Image (cartoon, rainbow, N blue to C red; front, side, top):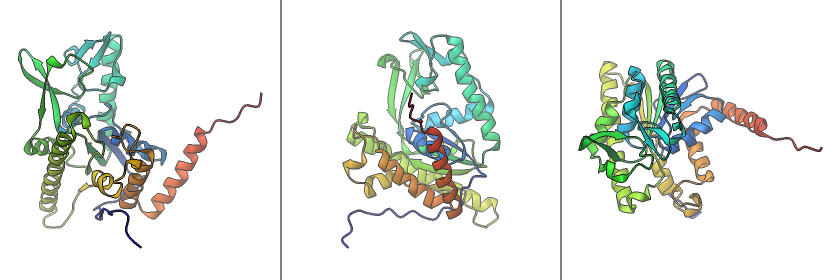
Length: 299
């Protein structure tokens, strides 16, 4: 038979995942796609507790805050379009009242802190190497996770280099966790097609450097025995090569379609789940769909 697609080789991970594990997922909205599938399959997961985070500096900063219990204050909020917003959270945490916004944001931080204590696996999905610095007192200040449609002149947009992306990953306080790194297959065409490729390439290089360093450290800690705890899952490559067709994109031609997400999710299962775990996933998914079924009213 003539091959009609390029298959991406997925290497055997150094660990498996089952329903006894607790998994924290952080990163772009692709983390939400995988996290939602895992929840429906019966896993104990915490998915994007701050909302989607796109760049490695924001992911590292939110994890650092959670680990240290560094709660948000008034200085971390901005008022725009009649609502209060957090520089570190998605728009779903915004509120008309400042106190309510702070309360929701700090509740998410506390939930992440508690989950981090007991989870054993972290999935990081990198979306972009572009960051937005808040201009504070006339100088480049903190990197924000979301601009919340604040005036563009309040930010400096910058493309991180490979070393900065790698260092941000290395700053993640998860060195005692099993880690899965992936690059989001969602295209950031607002950066232009060329800019998106520059951004993704830096993330790919940084992820590879991070994985290599973690592997070396694991070997040293194990006194010469291989004990790799970091794995790169090729979601980006699957989308670009195996699913190289616009029928696998949503109507915006940027996000993967539901079918593409299902295919990548199946690759994820095949990589990390045993046949027993996959069977349990199918049963849990069936039970979930049953709970979502709405009976037809005959009144």
